[in-house]
Image (cartoon, rainbow, N blue to C red):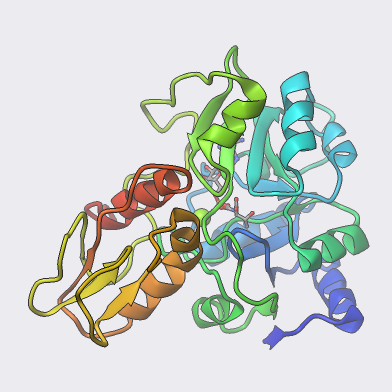
Length: 312
Ligand code: TXA
Ligand code: MG
């Protein structure tokens, strides 16, 4: 059920979470599938519902970094980033405290925790009303496209109670920064550009080569049903086309991520437009080249994974 959140529905969401249930939660990045992060069974239900491998840890959400300090070893870099960008599309990976009351399943076997304060009025209202942190991966079946509208969540999980917060503003998942090592490292490019992160932290360490530090960064991810063809300057016969910037091509098989060639606008439209073209019966989806500046880095990362050979 999709509802436009009123105080009554926030209370209903609180009751569902308290009883170990799951809800669909809007954030500024993508919709989350949220559960009480302190309840093992509730967190297990997330993995079960998404068919997510249990070694792939979850992001914990709250409304205040003081709450996170009970669960992670906070440090100066975390403080600086939190001050600059929270609430916002940034997740911090920090060493987990032995005394943390959060379910061990949330960490997926690692000795760290990923934490974030989302910038969405409904998410913040619910997090404050609930008090306890919520574990929330993107609300899609594992390996599939992330949801940027309540209706996307309802399509994938028809029985779920979803708070409808409209279209997500950022449209790509949060950037994940690992602060457990000597140098900070971006584990997942996302809704906050590397330039902005570096403006606070200075130069970053090299990203990990293998998936050990970022267990969720599987090669095939965000996969539509149709095959993708990337860096396509024009559509071929029978293809749908995801354009970027001004283009001479027109038709019902063509959508434009950003007519004015703005990567931030393209990020916001990306999953919605990809889903729309994917629900048609074209042979393939061709995607225009997207520049590697600002959020274009994260967008190209999602495209490469969406186009990767499916390993099932
Ligand atoms: O924007 C977002 O981050 C959204 C919204 C709902 O907050 N959430 C999201 O969650 O994208 P999910 O589960 O789809 O992606 C979380 C990523 C995964 O790649 C996971 O492996 C990684 O975060 N992650 C979680 N905990 C981690 C940890 N302790 N160390 C390293 N990576 C971690
Ligand atoms: Mg996800």
